[in-house]
Length: 414
Ligand code: HAM
Image (tube, rainbow, N blue to C red; front, side, top):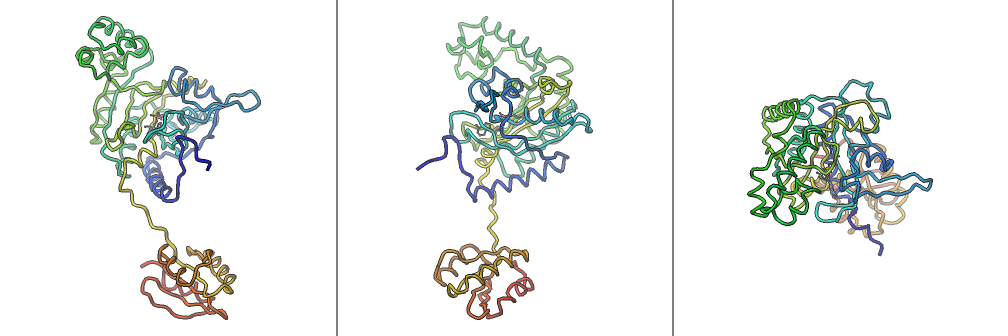
């Protein structure tokens, strides 16, 4: 048997129903704030991600599905959607629209990661991007929108971690300072932390080693080194979140896996998720449009993983399938009449299905009951049908041509 590739999955009808509920919540919540939906291509020029996400990131170094298009061009299945949305913003001249341009998406992403619960190689992201505003209110609005979306679909409990990364220059200076600090305390650090001082000094903050933790209590943090403008911006974002009644934890060690972030960064985690606890995150990316050859354009956004949202919501109601009319057969001779009645019923706006599996009449009625049909019309001889109300159990004979008008008159749901 041929199976779906590792780290991918089929979305079966039951699961699709739950996804549709998420989608309509996103549409309602983001639409109400003026975000309009966009869909970009599944693959893009590899250079878009190499430049946009960053050559040094794990995503670009190890996780991209990249292929040659047969004509010498390198293409990549999108590992994320922010860089494609910025490409589209530039390509379609959206700079000329009133700013910020607010967009949202529900798109597949592809990352060659080791699959585990909540981590897949093809997954779906909801995302929202506001391009063309540096106002702290934009960051505040986006964070509150994600909090509202998670709340509306029942993702809880969640924690919100918040930080600011300042500018790339501040970050580079801070990195040197942190490396110097770690070297000065080298003897007290765990071996793996010591080995990675140059490669990844921030890792020291996550160490479980007691000696390292003691050292890190006095380590300088990036938040203490922000440029005054960036610090002021961050204070304003925090004040807005306080105003909106959102609880957050300041986490100066919050690092995100993409290089384009500047200033605000944030991540929502859910304790219901286990190891892959990040349900959604994002931040400000004021330099990205310029990196893609556009003019300096501030922007901010987030993305949330659909599968992780579904894993963290147990109680999403699944709406039952509605069937107004099931057309059954007293004998095979009625098959064509049944076909026509089902077609006419659907054209009249009813949800109608007909018997297709050669069941006995008893089997057909049992099936109609199982799928929740409101009415069953049993096609008999000479243009007569028995119309059965599955709710009351009442049944009577009528002309086949009268079935639809009778149902429409009586109504389908009580
Ligand atoms: P990200 O944190 O890499 O950010 O991904 C966003 C969300 O996608 C994660 O919080 C997680 O829920 C989900 N996700 C990521 N990788 C996987 C995976 N392998 N399997 C399942 N779910 C996954 C971004 O992608 C940025 N573009 C977010 C952003 C938008 N920043 C600014 N604007």
